Amino acid sequence: MPQVDRPSDNLSARIRQCRICADRFASTATAHAPRPVVWFRPGARLLIAGQAPGLRVHESGRPFDDRSGDRLRDWMGLDRDTFYDLSRIAVVPMAFCFPGYDGKGADLPPPPICARSWHSAVMAGFNDLRLRLLVGGHAQSWHLGRRAPVSAVLRDWRRHLPGTIPLPHPSWRNTGWLKKNPWFETELVPVLRRRVQEALQ
Image (cartoon, rainbow, N blue to C red):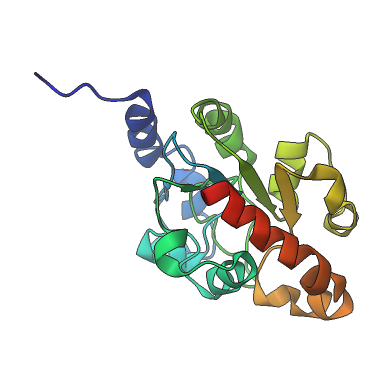
């Protein structure tokens, strides 16, 4: 009997083939071609909603395959094998491609057209999500339906339990913020690790 493609397989293939931002990326300082990093299946129990792939992830094709990912895995209390278990964990950034750098070498924001084109369909495909981790301001704005400073959203993190936990971006550029806000490590991270284990069971 012929194998029937699941709707999620078709959606993943369409996203991988997306070239909406080809001209936009060609005009950046990196002048790169689109390479959507697609990492989700409908049965995932935990969603990591991030910002956009960085250059290293663009090159490897694997989400959070960088120092930021090391820090995020530490916060979550997960090893790499568990983190990359597609049957349980989905990574859906606000842009599937590396947006590039500006002339000063800073990361460009995720192009809004990516979320407009794909996110509603991706989110509609999940059937067993137990926990959403909203990493950074772009993901928090989209998933919470409101714009607010990341620090304000994080201070109010308990409001979103048990199904959602907002997080700062794990970039090493945020080390200063983490030092100024020790409550993140002492109060939020233990709850994060417990909820991650509960979601994955």
